[in-house]
Length: 350
Image 1 (cartoon, rainbow, N blue to C red):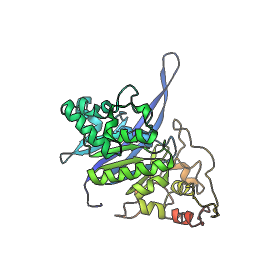
Image 2 (cartoon, one colour):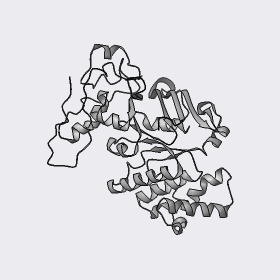
Image 3 (cartoon, one colour):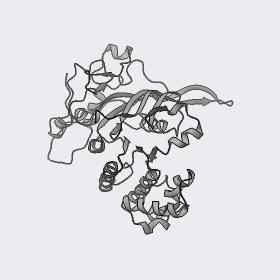
Image 4 (spheres, rainbow, N blue to C red):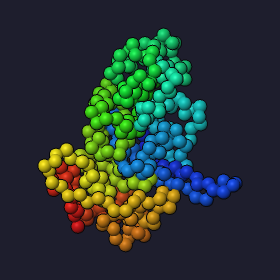
């Protein structure tokens, strides 16, 4: 995987939403939903993006595909062997790029038009991009539905006739209609039952192998991300706090927030006695983030420098592919998932 080419490279991505007040709707501030995010995704791999609700992970994904226009930064995507900055593309040029990068939405109930049949929903990308005839569309939709685990004869039905898991499969089929290289998966299983989650995750894994897809997999559940991701990126209050390959992240986290997320994973064993050390306080207001490190209001290891200086995202060791934004990453001995699962989790290192 390390020798694969970089498919997507994001540098200093920012997305600020204006706060307007008064009769003249004057801008009095900004919500910093994404504040200086940088990362890369290699061809054929899955990057899991995790964090609490409101951390900016969904906004990051929508900026990548330009459903939201970034405030600042570059989004370089490889097309025909060359990097293209999507942030600079006009609407017409971006339409062509969307043949290569698609999105699976979080809510399978609101993301499908209830007035359209499944045939029209799945074929819509083909129609918009003027690809093929209606007969070819029907054949393509039939193949896609069969591939995602649905029967082709269901294409004349409407979304309300399907369960949540089936609707998400329809959303996946629609995302695959243009034969994209990359999918942004925006919490595709969070609205589904646990048993259905496993089925959809297995389907996504099979599709990745079959079609050589690259995933940006957004989720808030680290136990879900563990099984599908090659690398994991942890976000907090609009910034990346840690990024590493999946095995390293779960065994030896370097950021206190990553440790807290790992300690929050539930264990399905009532006999196992584990301590819980929940984070105190609430996530700060993204319109008025704290000085220094964004995590300093909740971090159990906070020191004076954390209130003054914002730690940069740096590699823990040259060539390690493990990046962390913490002043004391080299000093802290944090607990990983193995310690948590074995019953030793919950306490914190000094």
